[in-house]
Length: 400
Image 1 (cartoon, helix red, strand yellow):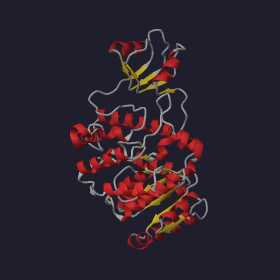
Image 2 (image 1 turned 90 degrees about the vertical axis):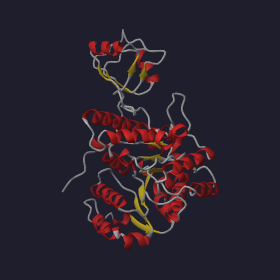
Image 3 (image 1 turned 180 degrees about the vertical axis):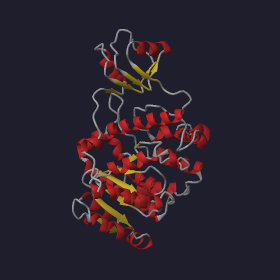
Image 4 (image 1 turned 180 degrees about the horizontal axis):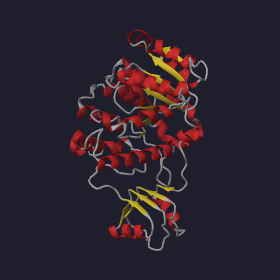
């Protein structure tokens, strides 16, 4: 029988020798020593460009950094540094230093429509270079990008977890094809709104449908319920995500009308206020044919779908809500159940299935899941399973 990996294998680590902001870099540079540090994704070509000639750099790793000239990078290598420069010809950073904001994914829409968006351009590049089976250069670029997202996600969630604990993170899963304005969409939006108001970090897979609705609710958490209803009514004028341009345009209109921006610290990094400005979305360019979910406060977008799926479930220690969905949602149910069964990521919160009839008759997942979790090596965990038709009952189960 498999056993869970040791905690130190799966827990995010603090790497004190990583430098990810220009302020951190300048402070360390002032000591005259960068040896042993990893410098990630910095624009060291921008004024004032640092003078690195007298700095100790033996064993320093520069990943995805830009220098004032090629000679600077060559000199660093001669003096014992390792330099992995940004890959040319890629529309995405090979070592992102922060999670995406919705505005970054939507950049270019005003000028070029859906095809001109950053998100779409990256997806088209991804398709043109092999998709899920890329060539070597593309594979290396994608792996470096996703590692940067891993790092940025750990940094972004650290403040929230320190203040609220891992049981405060709740996942919301469900069908991507749910139309805006439908009863299922409204239910998911109210769920996200209620959870964010109860100081829960809402995490979704970053797609349309139930996922967009949940992030929308979290985005409007500091506004009255009437604003949430009005926002959904406006979104319902472009209900189908396959109508990419209209779907995206209306989302941007709602964002503009109900502007909600996370605060930033003086060093340019975010505090945890983005949790109540949309929560977290973790999508993938594997599903880049679907328009970006623009209501999450922060977006950890990966190329690797496998990493993305595991990351969502690893974070959601405060429980998971499963709204009606098809094969993808059912896969997530049992992937989550595997983690709970073996205690892979520690204690799990409630499994809340919205729409009792759907999960007991149409797709009778509960009938398989309950005896499985009852047989966990950590004891009978079947009591974590709940079925309800009431959003407020679901919120109570996740916040009591």
